[in-house]
Amino acid sequence: MIRSKVSDVDVLEAGDGTPLVLLHGIGGAAEAFDSQLSGLAGEHRVIAWDAPGYGGSADLPGEPDLDAYADAVVSVLRGLDAEPAHLLGVSWGGVIATRVAIKAPEVLRSLILADSSRGSGRTADGRKAMAERARDLTARGAEAFAAERAQRLVAPGADPAVLERVVALMSRVRPRGYGNAARVMAATDHSAQLAEITTPTLVLVGSEDVVTGVAESRALAEQIPDARLVEIPDAGHAANQERPEEFNAAVRAFLAEVDTGGGAL
Image (cartoon, rainbow, N blue to C red; front, side):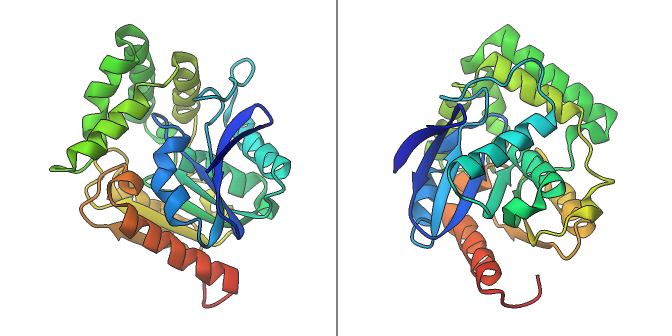
């Protein structure tokens, strides 16, 4: 596994083949995809970023909007000579990935939205929750915030080691990076634009996800033309970390179909 920097963004990279770029959730980092970096590297050039404002990546200037994050993804793809790429986003990362598919479909081979949403701006409760999360992080500090918040990201009875890892990753978030992400999520509702997406799309969701939830993933799959939905059994919101074998198998099968041009997508 190689760590490098492109366009002020830190990335982890492993493997060879068609590029697969991974965008983590609002409380994550590139290392949230360790199981995908190792498990999918046999077929793909797997690239996981630290989003701007996270890990080793610089903050975006000012008060960035969602387009600024989407533009950052395109810059990374071009800087790594990785376009067109398969783009997989988890939760907030999926919202960014959706915007890339709307704005710049020419840089994508496929789109995978894992435990994601149309954006928290879709409802007043969603907007309020995002604002409260950012304030809570600032008031309590990252470690206390992560210890409480991470419990909701895994299924009941999850492996304690998985929960420990989720907590550790969230404990590293920076208030400015998280605050910008929360503000952007609160301002986003892709409902009216999903029908514009022409990129082959897979929607994945943990069957026990109580953060964005199965119903929200089903709505994404129904509103994006020809998208398909796969549930990962006994997994929560962090399905890629909690059930990596099942998650990777679903991703691998979909990407093979796209790369070979087989079947209706």
